Length: 451
Image 1 (spheres, rainbow, N blue to C red):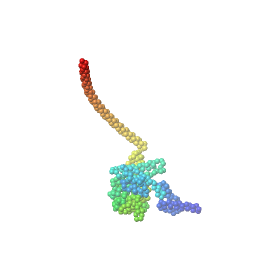
Image 2 (cartoon, rainbow, N blue to C red):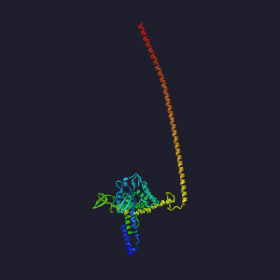
Image 3 (cartoon, helix red, strand yellow):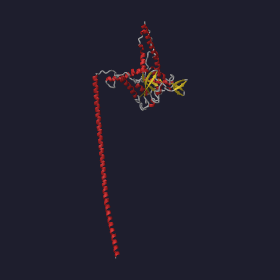
Image 4 (tube, rainbow, N blue to C red):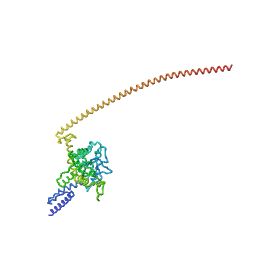
C-alpha cells in the first residue's frame, strides 16, 4: 500500500507539472482517466518549449519597395523598436545609384523569449530611370543564403547552423489605385518560387475605404492572371484557426499605415497619423490592416513562414543543386529532374574529354589572339619606321637648305669683306698722300724763312 501511495503521488506531481506546461503553451491536453496509465511522453511539448526558449529564435524579413512608401516606419511599428533610427536611417535615406542589398540585425526580447531579427532592405529598388534587372541583386542574395545553408549542412560539424535564409518578403505597392505596375508583376514573378511574398498596400490612409477595396480586388485579379504565387495560409483541421486564416486571406493584400507617433484620441493614447480631418489610427481595424498583418507575421504564422521556406523553397533549391551535381552538368540540372544513370568512371572520362577539348579551344583562341597581337605590333613598328624615315628625309632636306643658305651668306660675306678691304686700302693711300703733301709744304716754308 505504501508503494502504491508513493506511485500515485508521483504521478499526481507529474500531471500537475504537465498541466502547467500546457497552460503556458495554450494547449488543451485531455487528462488521462487512469492515473496508473500515465507514462509521461505527453510532457514532450514542455521539453521542446524549454529548449526552444533557451536556444532562441531567428527570423529574416526582407523589405522591398520604392522609396517613400513607409517601409522603415512600418518595420519600427511592427516590432515596437527603432530598427531604423537617425544613427541607422531607412533605405529611403540611403538611396543608391544601383540596387544594393543591405542587412541589419537586432536582438528582441519579450517575456524571456529572444528573437534574432534580420532585416534585409534594398535601397535603390525601383528608383532609377531604367529598372531593368533591378531584381537580380535580390535574387542573388536569396540564392547565396540558400547556398550558405546547404554548405553548412554538408559540413562534418553541423550542430549549430545559423539560419540566414529569407523567410518572408514584404513587397510594398504604391497606393496608385490603378493596379500593379509592370515592375511589380515582373519582380513577384521572379521571386515567388524562392521566398514567401506578402503584398502590402503602402500608405493606405491616402485611399478611401471604397477605393481600397477596389484596389485590393484589382491587385488580386492581376496576381491570379499572372499566376503569381504569394504566401498561402495553411489549411488546418481546427475550425477556429481555419476561420481565422480565411479572414486573413480575405484581407490580402494588407492595406497598412505606419506611424511611431503617440497621439491623444478620445482620452486614449494611440499610435497614428494626425490630419486636419482627424487621426488615422494604426491599430484600428476600420482604418487599416496593421493588426492582422502583425498578428499573422509575428503571433500566428511566423513558424509556418519558416517551415514553408525550409520545406518548399529551400528544398527546391537543394534538389536543383544536388541534381546538377549528380548529373555532372555543373550548374545545369537534368531537365527531367531525375538522377543520372551514367557510370561514374564514364562520367569522369566524359568530363575529362570535355575539359581537354575546352582547353584546346582556349589554346587555339589564345594563339590566334597572340598572332593578331604580333601582327598589330609589327604593323605599328613598320609604321613607326616609315614615319622615322620620312622625318629623317625632311631633316636632311632642311639641313641641306640651311647649308646652302649658309654658303650663300658666306660668299656674300667674302665679297663684302673684299670690298671693305679695298676701300680701306684706298683710304690709307689717300691719307699717306695727304700726309706727304703737308710735309712738303712745311719744308718749303722753312726754306723761305731761312733765305
